[in-house]
Image (cartoon, rainbow, N blue to C red; front, side, top):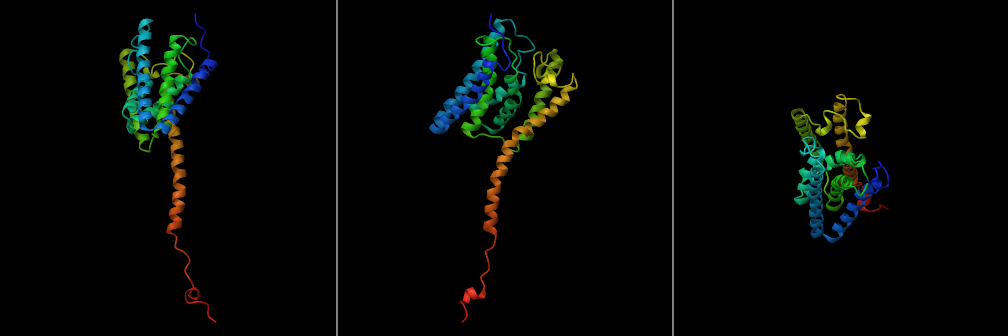
Length: 256
């Protein structure tokens, strides 16, 4: 029997630290070695994500855990993975921004409060934390290794796709009696949902928090763009400002 998983224990903290450290190292390598290294790293991330997804299904089938409530790709992390894999294989703005917001706002919660029972080297620990950590790490690599970032138009696009996900998940929950997206009940393990009101009041609260997360995750880029505009505006103002007008004495010389 494996040791029980300890939330914010040593193993959990190591996984979260690696989630930040690995993309930082790979981003530095890609910037130093150029496009070929970037392509290899991106495809490596894609293979890791696909392989982890397959391993998750193998584990659940082997242990008899697979059922209507988890066999469909209807969790937000699943949609984030699809958008991210598409971006890693063929970088594009619209798929990247979905991966960026969904991973950093949604998948991060899974990494911080994982639904696992036992510690490493239990297979569930490896598959769950590797899968969630790899999603976040790959997004961070795309930011710092390739320079991809959200833009102002990303906000309405991501909001629209997020509402589409919510509608799809809620419809699936209603049709199959399952709980994708947690529209029918809170998660069965400790999460931030424990801080919210009881069902169904937490649903509109979650929607408002989701909107707030979109703006919060865009805020660093807004501030960066704002800071970049200020020196340019000052330089433009100085260039456009007329110089002092020379006096007649200055033009004709000093009169005796």
